[in-house]
Image (cartoon, rainbow, N blue to C red; front, side, top):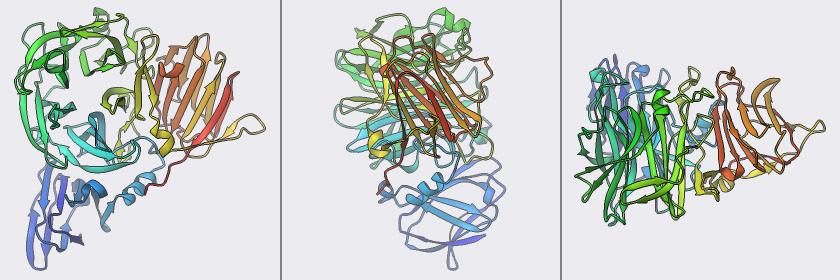
Length: 559
């Protein structure tokens, strides 16, 4: 197959491919660049076009090119990448609004929630706001819609909802596919130093041949190129985990900050102490040499006894005069409900490198189990968070061009009771305004294929919310005996998705093509579920003594 493309001087083409197959770029009789044969494992290729011209792109097997895009470095921050789709009919290029239209044409893709254009996505990384631009990095596997060697994808936004897709920012230290291994650029955070310099700390899992034991994880510092399109350098800053305290292979997901009290830099990492999930503290005077200062949290034996292997994605930040710790326990299954994939929070004081929680009782941050690997960041006095919406027990149906979504962005605060509160950011109303729906004569609401936002205020005991597609269940929410419960079509009763809800007088339910986000008691109770069955309900019945407002969310046209 062959297509002609008008390439500007400096244009960059980046793609991943796996043989058999080839690609060749020519101008007239001149050969500009070629890959004569792709290897039998996925590999990354990059072509930099030097002089503006109409070039001929020739290839033999469309399926060999796994993910491809191009861009002009001078304009990509405004236009985003151009997706290159190779197929039997030729080459299709999509940029900006064309990408949005193509993504929006997928009836199974949620509309309000961020997702990658193609391939696999998991944890949010490197979140920050620079000027008036929000930056979202994320764990990305460019060669498949399944988990694999990790890279960092990148997108930017002016409003937290409309995103422009940028080139892949971070690549693994080694080609794990070639080695038949897993690993790569794992999770980490953005850090702005006191002089305004920006950098990214992250874990590199070195090539690993077992997902559960024996691997090595090191901590690295990436400094970006001007424009933040790629990492200009990546240096190892912490190569060896502490040898004491029974710390084994899990040693990852740094969160770095400048600590005014200590007059030095601090880093927390997820790990385990003699098998108990733990958060470790390291200190540094120069960001390069780090010293282990000891654990600042160790989970009770109960969690190890029920499968927890280690802490991952620890988040630690000041909020409302307190310090908040958020963490996930890898492998833990709650014995009373069967839930796994839970996130926990503690609120307390941090002084002299010691964290003292106000209570030893862990707050379950989201009772639904599809809200995981949350990362938060401070922006202009607000603490904003995203999380990965996924549960390894339920997978996206085969044939989808992508896998993985982010939660709605949430703003964090502390409640009077000391609990961490999470609510959708105010930007939601500006980008997806609400249009109230009227109840039908039978008391139910008729829904279209659009995100919905249901708000209840008042007495909630006895409330029952049932959404159906045809006559088949999309979701059900109930409040009974002081308990808030959620049920999806796939639930068989083996796992119980519920939270105590005795005194709450407010409930908000946001639904977007299979993504259900529930907020109650002013955000003290949150529950997130992801379903792939009956994801476009056309009817919702609400039985409640509370005041009920159901709205349809419609996107403001992006200019």
